[in-house]
Length: 431
Ligand code: AMP
Ligand code: GLY
Image 1 (cartoon, rainbow, N blue to C red):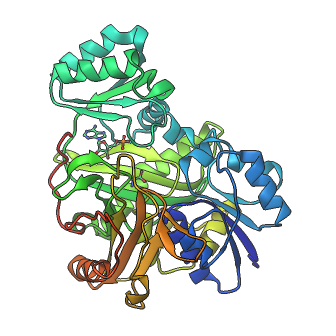
Image 2: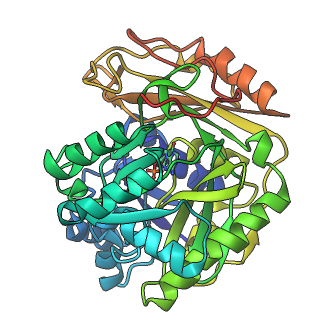
């Protein structure tokens, strides 16, 4: 079906993994990444771009006559990159701004879940004017709740609370002090759930859903799931407690398809990666959130296990003809360990030289995120999450051993990495 040229929007490890998987699908396809990083430059052409400038991205795609645009970050989807591409008649894998509201508004997501009968935590939404109703709900939950900014807040707009005082304080910060800016002018308060978390990605053409291997990310900066939240310090796939085909089919039937059906029935068909953030609670599976994009770093362990050409699946989604069902996956498991820069997740130091990548085993992957080449062609740190070493193996333990064995060969000053990626985690401890 001839996919000659593809444009991937974004610059992180997720986009490097997408570019890698597109290259694995086809040796001949011309891959462009806007704006990309030093890792994507090695297998694709980087094109400078502002991912939230929808018309600018569509112009690049049109000028370069690309056959498919693949949207990485939520900010690009929310800014209407897919809408702008569609206006130019360019096939795009990624949701319109209206469909991306499933991620960009938590209240909207909760309404969709209720309408579609998708299992989720009990909830109440409101703004400053609804304070007394919100407080009554917090009292009913005896303070065991989560306060979430309604809008996009770089993954930081969620406060887990154990007491009424803590929850009231979180409301003050969100609604009064605008700690999360406009994103927090409205909040969702929901009941606190407990249990391990799982991420499941469904690739959709607006009607059918192709479900990928489940993954688990490790969000806190320190071992044992302690310390500040980050973009993700590593991931594994599949988590041993969510590895069965029956689990995946259940997620598809009770979570992904009902959400896709509801969005289509509302007039906003979702084309792209619908990402369900799930919690396996003692009372069964519950949806914590939907995202309108591939998760990062989960993508960096899910795609290496995919046993069919990603590029063709994404194109089939964009054309409205993807096949329903569970995508074929390799046996075994993958573990990815993130190496972050000094200071992450706060202010990070940049410019440290990265060495040792040439010593990695041939079949071990290094997906780059915050990297840049200096004037002398040396690789240097240029962001918080610098790179992720991903290895596969017969099981999680084997993959984990190889990932850490290879990470030990990588050096840059201030490198931070968790030592427990791939091991079981306790339920998250409020930071
Ligand atoms: P969200 O952005 O909604 O996925 O929330 C971010 C993180 O907050 C999740 O990955 C969970 O660790 C935690 N979280 C969200 N909702 C709940 C909940 N209802 N109960 C317990 N933890 C939650
Ligand atoms: N790994 C979490 C996220 O991508 O939001």
